[in-house]
Length: 336
Image 1 (cartoon, rainbow, N blue to C red):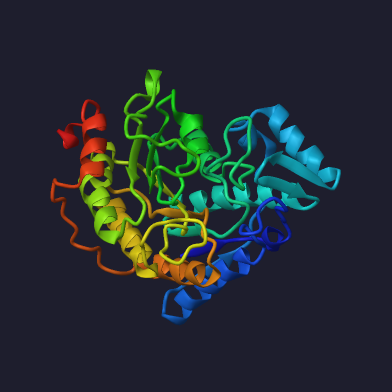
Image 2 (cartoon, rainbow, N blue to C red):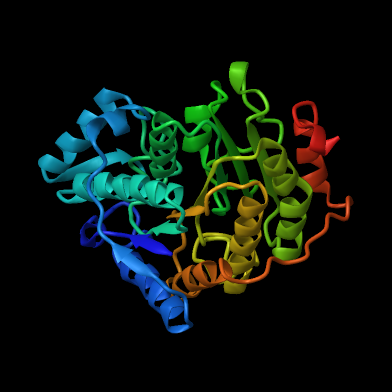
């Protein structure tokens, strides 16, 4: 496992949202250390800021200029819950750079984790929101495609729907986006019937779950929806928007996952990547606001890559998963 990070992540301060605190960064790195103490071989690697062309492949130039200028002026805000300080542009570009280098590491054959902040999956082409400034997963996906990777998938298990990631790829079909998230909940998107448009129809796959859902329901979503689609799509690269705010102890979410649940998610995805002859998966830190839960969940994710996958099977009687299967079945033979 290669872990990509930079100390600048701790210097970004979002004054509009105290829960997305600088302390999240060392808490996540402590999770890496716990995995190392448990016997996982980890190599820590630095990262460089994402180059401007890589950012412009995802974000509007005027929006990038706005962020850079706000930080240069000492800070400001782009949304009611999303603010910058003087260090935010540096931190955000390094977070996207970490995502790029993690993807490159995986393409070289090693599983990777980008431990960085601010998170990214709510950021769209020309907007930031939900604590997010740059969409790290989208930047990594487009960078991989520019280097010749034809089939890229992003799986998002954050408790909030990744509306920014969905928006970026919704109409083009270039990247497969899959999300499991709490609903109804912020940001109000991610209905099962949101399947993409134009060339992107069928390449957005949402499983909105009711609050208080536990691992049993998530297992149904994996076994009955994500795994069949990914088997059929056969991604060359799988990026995971790894948010940990669906943990039962999280300050914002309302789900009932435990730290070990994320290890089983990682184990299942790693096994699937091997099955379809993809490179090892890439994990990109998104949400997760209870510091102890964040530490434990990051450790479980890394350890899960070396464990046997769970023997999940789809029962066929979980209503939210059935709704998702019905919405996507016109596009994926494996769901019919």
